[in-house]
Length: 103
Image (cartoon, rainbow, N blue to C red; front, side):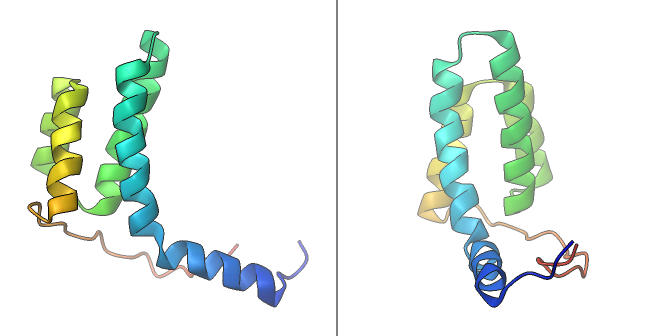
């Protein structure tokens, strides 16, 4: 694979610098998607994605388990609201040591 250009490296770097904001926005969008989902397959996929995003954001494990177990979009919406107000203490997972642009 060819080496990335400086421009590509900067784009990747900015993405990872803003990953938290991107994930918070994604979680808010998932609330809407869950309310609008018409099939069980769609709902299952959205819940899997929501679990991954909450874990990546550092939402406490017990909270993630409660939200996923409830399968209620309103509970997920409450988590998003609390995150936006700063009421949830987020614990960032430990980094693996890989750089974002490592292949």
